[in-house]
Image 1 (tube, helix red, strand yellow):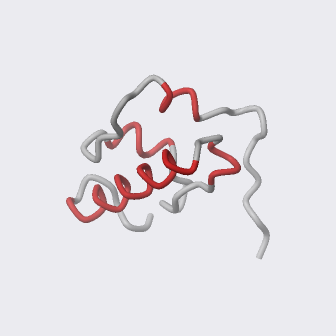
Image 2 (tube, one colour):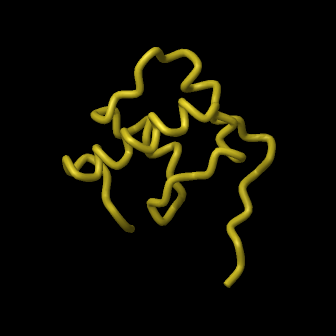
Image 3 (tube, one colour):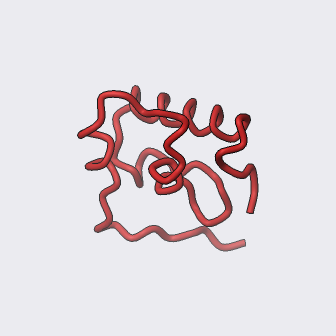
Length: 73
């Protein structure tokens, strides 16, 4: 199975730095940080800090439970 290759030039961290709080109800923002299969994109590709990545993962998981994001595609 081949690994997914993410473009190195695409910086997704700029979207989060402008926000003070990552909201689980903002599905459009959270979709940017998931791949085409619905998995959370790793920190080395998003460019987020450790705390931001943990908060992002928590928000995505909470959003999945509430039904805003699908578990799989």
